[in-house]
Length: 282
Image (cartoon, rainbow, N blue to C red; front, top):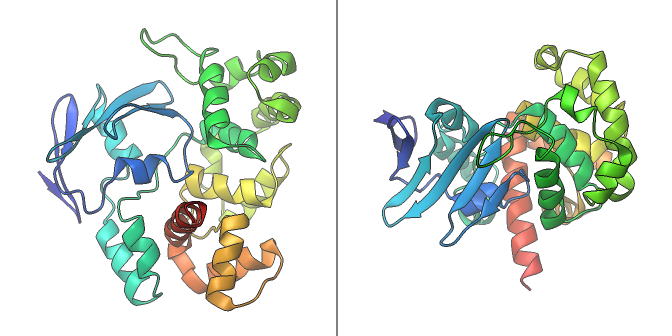
């Protein structure tokens, strides 16, 4: 039994989560941070990352994460982080209780950086279902794992042509993906994890098809940089709610990071998910 804000049990082939106050699969997987999953019945999901696979099943008394690599998915779902503590600070210090309570089960995933870069380039001016379909087709260029495909490594990605990407539904982003596969060979991706956030953002902005919002998404969802705050249409609305005025998106991001500090990334996810979900349903 592990108790670090949330109780869960690691077994040989699964993780059992009984306390769901800080874990909700729908919140985690459908808050816009990941595109490599498919939804099944009853809030259960198939989740793919690198060459790994897990079934996340909703049970009467919580969730089970069924996988042959429990250590990987313990890290992937960030289970060791105390989200109850984070939420308490966001509620009591920053007064965003409505957003935190609405998305109480969100956890920021520890995703593979290559998948995140490719996924968020595809995400530009796109919708989640189309992004997911394109990412699933890209996986078919990776290793055959039996019942699923691994995400292609960089060498395999370089074999995918612009025409291939176009057939997958990447649209105008197809040429970006081909060029980025070349650009990524110029660095050791493992080395980039040690770079400062400012250096990382400068490098990310040099990649074809990566603008400020996509760069911030990669920083948050690929590098777990809490001092990043992606700004889109929904966060623009949030900004006006918080500060009563509008400025450029770059200034919004800067001001929001100054306001929320090291918890910026967490605040962004709760606020984004709440605003998008509630405004769309009006």
